[in-house]
Every structure is written in C-alpha cells, then in structure tokens.
Length: 254
Image 1 (tube, rainbow, N blue to C red):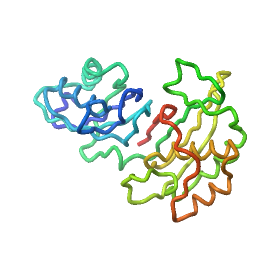
Image 2 (image 1 turned 180 degrees about the horizontal axis):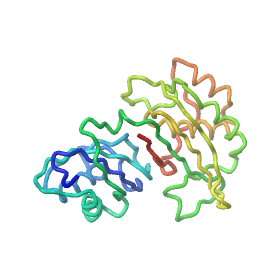
Image 3 (image 1 turned 90 degrees about the horizontal axis):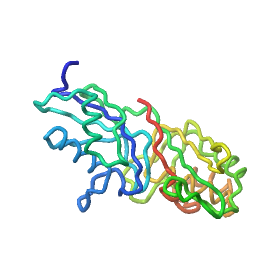
C-alpha cells in the first residue's frame, strides 16, 4: 500500500508500567499508557486519534506486547515505519512502539484475540535485587515452590473464574479457558515466572491466581480450596491479590 489514508493500523507496543496508572485513560491524569500514546499520535499526525487496546493492564503492570488499533483519516501520508519512528520520538522512554501494520477495517483488537499469555515474575526470600524490584515481586521465604507446581494445574481447562476476578470487573461472563500454565526458573538468578496462556482474562485474574498459589505454597490454603473456588457460584477469596510489579502482558495471538 502506498499510503494509509482511511486505514486501520495495528501497533505492537511495549511498556514498563511502574510510573503509570494502568493502560486506560482517566479524566484526572495523563499518566496512563493510553493517554501518553494518544498524545504522541496527535503530535505525529496533527489529529486527535482514539485508540483501542487488546485489553487493559492495571497500574504498575507491564507489557512486553500490547496490541493497539486506531483509524487514521488524515490528509498527511504516513507510512508504517514513519508511524513507528515518529511516535517513538514523542513517547517517554518507558513506552515504545515495536511495529505497525495495516489491518482490515472491521478488525477488533479484543474480539479477534485467539490467545493471550501473561508472565508473573517473582523471587522467594528476604531480599530483592534493587535493580529488579519494579518488575520482580519478592514473596516470603516460607513459599514452597513444589506446592505451586502441584496446585497450578488445577486452573488448566475451562472454569468459572468468578472467584479470581476483581469486584468491579464489568465482564458479563466469568467463564474462561486456560490452555496451559507453567512455572519456570530463570537461570541461577533465583527468579521464577508463572506463565499462563488462555483465551482471555478477567480483571486481576492472573494476580488473584498467583495470590492463591502463594497462599497454598505458604500452607495458608489448600488445593481443596482452589477446587471449591473454581466450582462455586459464589465468590471465594483465596489469599491476597499478588502485587502488580511482577506481572507482564507477554504475548497476543490473532
């Protein structure tokens, strides 16, 4: 395509969410990722452009890959590489556009997601590396990793995740499917990450799953409690919602 007038564009962006109050725009602050991106789009194109992401991330949560679409109707011809380099000029250092592509006019970045993956990075002990504290959560040293490995498979498959969503989640259905859930160690660093791949996620769902697993790993809850929560029609809270800093939106497949 020689130009992108009247085209829908999909951006792949990455960001460290520490400084921001989540993805979504808020009326009382510009310190959201969406606000910063839309400000950069206006500076690059000279127009007010609205964006739509594959999903929201909470305050302090990061994204290795976030998919964001927008419609551009401007007279100024801007090529795909120009969108990438131009936006990165105006974006802060902790938000960057990785790539841009054209998509069909009916493309919807939420409805067309086939699967998403999240990774939650954590360490067990009394001290965390000061250079990693904004992206790796430190859990108490009584966490038993083997108990996480045993309990995490309970979440695999189709379940009602009502007990693992936040109370103000507007989603109409709480049924979701987890395709895989794995725990891996990062070399000899003492850092682990829990990777969850699924069809979609409720607000705080990954952080609440992580919190429940930590409760089991500290012997403050059991696998029986998780089974009950996944089968109950009422919300059953297990453990605390895990902190946001360890969570990354890792990948999206369309």
